[in-house]
Amino acid sequence: MSNEQSSPGLISWLLLIVLALVWGSSFILIKKSLLTFTAGEVGTLRMFIAFLGLLPFSLPVIRKIERKKLPVLFVVGLVGSLLPAILFAIAQTRLESAITGVINAMTPVFVLLIGLVFFHHRIKTINILGIAIGFVGCTFIMLGGAYFDLSGVNLYALFVIAATVMYGTSVNLIKHYLTDIRSLHITAVSFTLVSPISLGYLLTATDFLDKVGANPEFLSGIAYVTTLALIGTAMALVIFNKLVKTASPIFASSVTYVIPIVAIGWGLFDGEVLNIYQIIGIGIVLVGVYLANKK
Image (tube, rainbow, N blue to C red; front, side, top):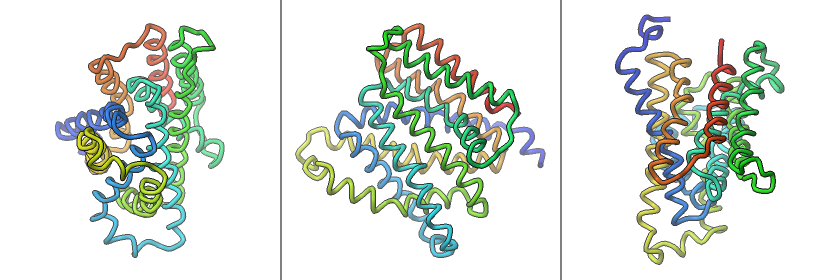
């Protein structure tokens, strides 16, 4: 490992901050997009615009990839991008963006858990403890939001958890079957493979076309989704890949701990309110994520 990798410089730290701001802002952008579009429209439109933005990266390489790997890339696009994009949007129709951003931090936990169960990864006891604590934190957030009144528990948090499970599945598939393909190309090609589903759903199963020109909020809604797609997806991936190369994968993955802080900040700025139980739950989740990733 080079000195540059073992000791992240100023540029690496700046890139990490930018990446955290970009990804942490995704949840408030979803919230604003939902003022104009349905959850299905936000998810599929986000994916299709991101596909267009990443097209210059996918076109030169898609024909060079082994045919047997294309089905895996399709599944990665489906469970690692398209379905989570829709699930996050559905969740945020009933869930605060700050809470969504915190539960999203459980992604590394599910990466470990799915690796352990389905791919026979070996992990330490401290990691298992972190996984357990993470689940306790998520439960605390859900129950605490209703002040532990079971009748008022917001089950939409389960959509976010389902999305993080899918992220965990996607990461493990990439790790086991696609290690010889650059991560940027994996993303670009996987987006290309699922783009017909995104466009098909958008045009045939939603009222998106009826909103074009008819909805006075259409342009502002498109602006939010486009920002979410091009900056929150395409640009963020470029920054992340740069970080992995110039610093290290471990340093790059530390953005996981900063994203919830940014998401909470945006939520509070937008008038969202967190009670003391949710704040405690947030702290528990972050401790769990830290222990789950501890080497």
